[in-house]
Image (cartoon, rainbow over the protein chains, first blue to last red):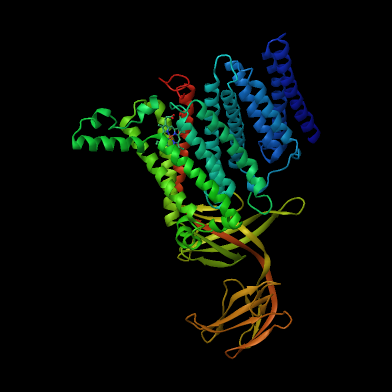
Length: 260
Length: 369
Ligand code: HEM
């Protein structure tokens, strides 16, 4: 299983790398349209999907546990969002940024063990799997929203039909709804497994912070005075908060905290 | 903006403020107050303050005391606020602020929802948002009820033992406790057979394991956090009735209205005062349950293995060992409101999503933007 995983994982990384290369070469030479960068990315996505299915079958559960699988899943959503924007809004100029984010997630994933491990009783529940899957899908979409925010702040054109506002809106909106489900599933799981749907553990508290933060963003995203650069800043800060909740807390409290 | 208009509230008319009379000014001021209270911007400002307070407070609390979270989770929130927070002041200041901000946010949400019912025009699309808001209000109400009325307790039970859970009006009995091991022999889970008694008759029973607690109504018994095997009783030779077996929750009649029972045990390596484990605290009581005498018997070097208790000679025989677990019992009267609120909130997000995609009748695609 580990060799199949490594092969498919590496292939998807290579395809995404090729996609980036094709984009920059076509951009520089203008010999071919930039949109052909989408095809290697589709091949990468195919590898990721096959890997997901194989691991799902091998482990008999949705493969979203551990560093490797969660980052794979995050990258999958980033690529799906990038491809959707490319096909729907011709956002080929935004494409390399999203592919770059997916590559970063996959490189980070490579640091985790690739073996398929059985679920321990504490996480052997659909609630946990839904919780993790929706969280990481949301993290990916919040990342995409932040990237669109950077494009808009810098005045770069991501899509020739000026769909950037629509793209940031859609990423935040779907990300928020997925994250809401993550909170619902996580709270029910905490109630059944740990004694309460609200615990004072720091990771859970920061998830609430993230949820409330994006609730706030959702309420101002369409208001006059907010949907320009303030929304871009909110999207970028939101992703920084996401990274802190996911990575920063783990690093900050690594030494002695038993509950992270 | 459409949203701005929508949230102007039922008194939202500039002309009212401008008629110059005293009552006109008052109405104008009230209209302004209503506008501010029901404005999403007010909610957003409160949300940001809430996030900053919880974010900074939670990190600072950890650095003050890394066990802070574990201790806080032992109590329902209200009890913690009453008993612990005042002692920790000013380190608990951020939690007081968090409570105030939470209530303000809920007030804003409540007013906003009332405003929606008063003003709403786009019934179909807006239903998603109002379901989310109502669901959240229910979750919060459930949390407040659970914190105010709820209770949490812990009981250590050895296999066969029955104990009262004070304050909850029930007793628990541990029928059996099996430790589940991984193929490599590591303990990974426990299976506990629990009986719950109310007024001395069995009320409910079941087998519990991780993620599958025993739930009835608003009360839950969770699998043991801590378990192991150790001394739970032993054989005691008595001068009046020969050898008797003392175990958890078991008293033995010695005749003449006197009973012998177990007051507690110390495990190997444990100490309490001058008593060294392993050993048994033996109690002699009269018919009314009043203590006549007590003694600690132990085979440990330097400890007494026999004693005289109000004329009865007691001698420690073999110690018996069995499995025990530390069980948590939680009661949360608000939890069903929270669960119904969660379902409504979840449905609301689905509805809102459908509205956003333009799937709902009469709603154009992308009307969320
Ligand atoms: C915990 C608190 C809250 C949560 C989780 C929440 C969540 C939501 C969600 C999911 C939507 C649907 C978004 C859409 O379909 O576009 C929404 C819309 C809305 N909410 Fe809230 N909300 C909260 C508090 C509030 C408060 C306090 C107000 C008013 C002060 C408010 C006002 C609105 C308005 C006006 C809309 C519709 C307009 C829009 O889409 O921006 N919300 N809310």
